[in-house]
Length: 570
Ligand code: PPS
Image (cartoon, rainbow, N blue to C red):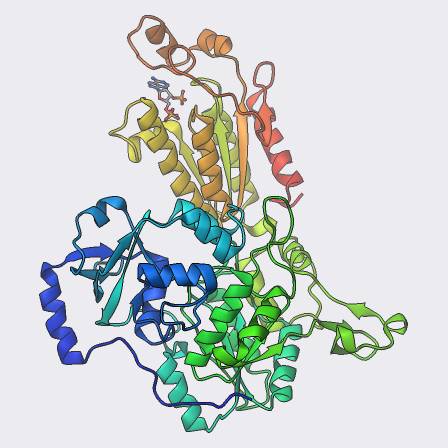
């Protein structure tokens, strides 16, 4: 049985007057501009969410955490919290030096005395902390591809909290939550950690967990960084707000946690428990595959489904919160209610229903029914607004081919056909238009072509994100660059690569702009297909042959493809 201690937890902030003074003095310090994850970490360091840490880990603390989840002084801490920086930045520092930590707009948040600097063995960190040095794990991928190669450690002096403009009223520091619980007289509080929208099953299980623990309930969703591809936190918070009303009055509250998750499964569960203890909670719900990152590169789960519960149980006393293990809840149609799967004794006589995450995404994608027994109508409405059916989502059609292959002509015809259908705004990013308006300073070297295509990709991804149709028609000769653009766009919607497969001989024969002649005469250098390479797309969504087909027919082939992909209603 855990005893709740709601005395204020130590923060790393200095007083308002000292902060003002420090801000001025820090103007002379070398600055490190924190990235999004580092800002999340710093916020929880400063407000006591990561207590007992007093700063970014020193080398000895880091070694202990990586090897056996313990700081140098023996305290339990499962996840390395490091200030990773570039080699170049680290080189210019002396140990003992103070540096300023700033947000992405240059606002100073803290200073740090650099006591330690080292080059970590990232493969070891991946193996020990995440269980495998496998890039399919988002945190391992981050470690190798985003994190700097040098770690700095040392104590932090907090100047101010990172600024948040969204959901300000729902963000609480550990001390604010402790004060709230004191005020409400909540002696036992069970926290529910989530990075997903809440459906009826979650509502039911959290309600039951609170009843079982005879505790009040804190819905404590993560709004910092979650698993790539998750529903954005703006949508989720609107969903949570709708669900909060479904609990019996004044039993439950919600607060947002600006944590950068690592998806470290068992270690992450222990970490989440420590963080909740700091926020004044006495109980914590640990689910099946808690903070699991999904499948590894061999297609197997990174962690066993109950590894997190096992590790949590082992360290429960030290964590200081009691685990409430997650029940797998299913809907029993005959009784019209949710029940824990392992408590159903008449399984053969009743109809057990559930909808998986994948099935839910499919139904949202295709605009299909989502039954009321599965989710609250308000939640479904929010999710549908963010994930409309494919026929209402933005997408990008990306034509590629030689100069004079017919890309622009087909693209124009396609644009008109799509505008005739209506429903979504259409933008044409033709090679020539882009070079005039976005890339007028660029030439045709590989570097400049790549820059040009990445700019087109950026604009197309923004259009796609906002529900429009982008039609791009550059030459885009390099496969790697086209792939990069595909990745940019596919975060937000479909990407349809159309190879306009007119042969170079035919393009040269047509020579609409007279450029091939000039290229042959050497008057235009680096001319695609003549004196510059073109990587033929290996697996485009569509390949269009223009020789012997008219423009209308070519554009129609694209329309058929879009219909087949569900992007336009047939
Ligand atoms: S790229 O490679 O995708 O950045 O090229 P893009 O922006 O589509 O621009 C191609 C148009 O510029 C004209 N042009 C050249 N093309 C290829 N190579 C060289 N050296 C070159 N110099 C000028 C050409 O007319 C292309 O227009 P389109 O519409 O493709 O015929």
